[in-house]
Length: 162
Image (tube, rainbow, N blue to C red):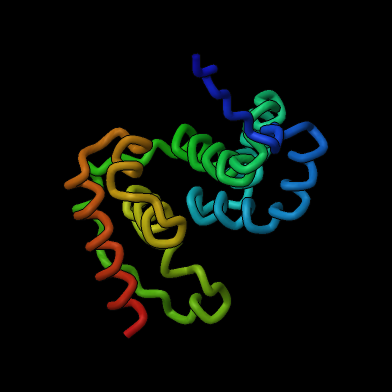
């Protein structure tokens, strides 16, 4: 009679420890702060968002190590969304703003001048590579809202650069 075969993964699944998160945060602090700043468009809110996200990450120790970096970025997104509450309703009311030299001082000025919803969609979809579906779920809106906001953001980016 044949015995059932059991396959065992020889490599143990590694879970993130507090030390792993601290190492990830140390390596990623600048990038995480930049992500937080681009989403919130405010240095004080960016710090507050990052601190809240880090706090939640520390509480959630035990996530798979391979996911630790992605999970940390996801927590920054989550906390920025809770803080700013971007909504698609206001996106059509924004006019094109002249930078008048501020782009020379801040390379992110064209992103920071976007409406909050457009800015979130731009950062999440273009810079972070989230799908339309992921953006829609996180922002609690339709995929159409996400697509329209991205188109508007890209149009504003190109007109400002010109």
